[in-house]
Image 1 (cartoon, rainbow, N blue to C red):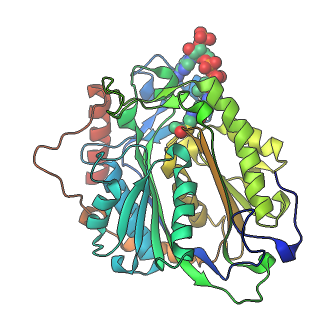
Image 2: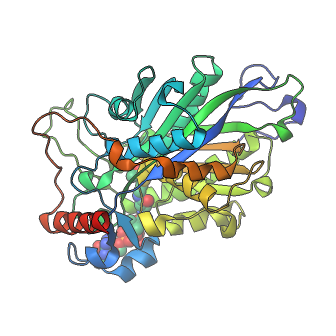
Amino acid sequence: MSTPRSEATQRIGGETGSAALPNRTTRIIGWGHEVPAAVVTNKDLESVVDTTDEWIVSRTGIRERRIAGTGETTASLGAIAAARALAVAGLDADAIDLIVVATLTPDHLMPSTAILVKEAIGSTRAAAFDLAAACSGFPYAYAVAHGFLTAGLGQRALVIGAETLSRSTDWSDRSTCVLFGDGAGAIVLEAIDLPADQVLAKRPGTLSFELSADPAGAYYLWIPGGRATGAAPDETIKMDGAKTYAYATRTMAAVALAAIERAGLTAAAVDLVIPHQANLRIIESVSKSIGYPMEKIFVNLDHYGNTSAASIPIAISEAVAAGRLKRGDVFCTVAFGGGYTSGAFVTRWDADPANGARAASVNAADITIRRPEGAVAAPVPAALRALVDGRRSARETA
Ligand code: ACO
């Protein structure tokens, strides 16, 4: 970790380059999320695998998750979240220059999920691509969009984290299938120009990043998938839980602290930490090791499980709605995931939380993903599929 610097020499985003603060940064002006209608409780999973509510809650803190029903996909969830973020920002889709979807469960290998989202939200001019950094996908995508915007390549970006992990889960493996859930979150990131005499302590918007990648973990948390090895395709998650747990507790604290220090702050000056929602025990351990109270850490994994790249943007959207982020508050997000990867960013919130109410103007039924003939639903056990689709239609007719 680098040593603290005086305010005059503090820099954004790295150890190299000019000592002056750049005059351009980004801020979040729109946010939103979408989760599948069907709630699947731990009790429901007792009829799918040999598990108990007590085991899942005591080991992970997860009580329920959302599972995508027929017709709900990574692209459809991402597009609805994106439409809500646009509505909150008060923008037309063509105000967006770049769409990045962080996901490890794309609808297809080609085209990208971002292209499908682009069409569904009515964007005609944005560049669009997917980004693969597993559960660290959102901080990675945010950093890429920030770099794009501060380099002057555009004015606004949609940064989306979207997943349907239920379709890449081995439903006979109780050590993984109880952990994951489906959902999507999105933000609109906008470039802002700042006065030359700014001081870091008052600077609005994005303050710092820390990204890391450790190939030692490549086969401790992975989805073999792909075709390039010539092996038979296997698209389900494999995980060494103990190794991943150890990596997560070690790395999340270090990465969060590095980003906070780069922003010229101490942990005590951060108003809210929004961690990747994988496991309550991991979050509690991070809280302990950086001496940061659990009351200032946002947790919603009890409702959603681990939604991978979607977990942080869903949590941002819910944190704003819950009044946990006010204009001027500094928050830090931190994630870990397959790769192994990890990532954090620190941002001073600079939007009116009341704008969140505008998301209600979006009618999810108006947002559809164009499908080719004969598209099929992905494999989830028949009993679970019936339960999910039953709950979904009950919600729709309620
Ligand atoms: N229900 C009941 N028993 C179970 C279950 C289950 N769902 N799963 C495992 N068990 C059993 C095991 O078989 C084992 O039994 P045994 O002792 O008879 O062999 C026992 O419970 C203990 O298993 P452990 O793996 O030691 O359980 P542990 O306390 O380590 O918790 C867990 C497992 C929750 C998976 C933990 O290792 C963990 O959280 N790891 C990190 C996982 C994670 O966050 N992954 C997401 C990464 S993010 C991304 O990029 C996708």
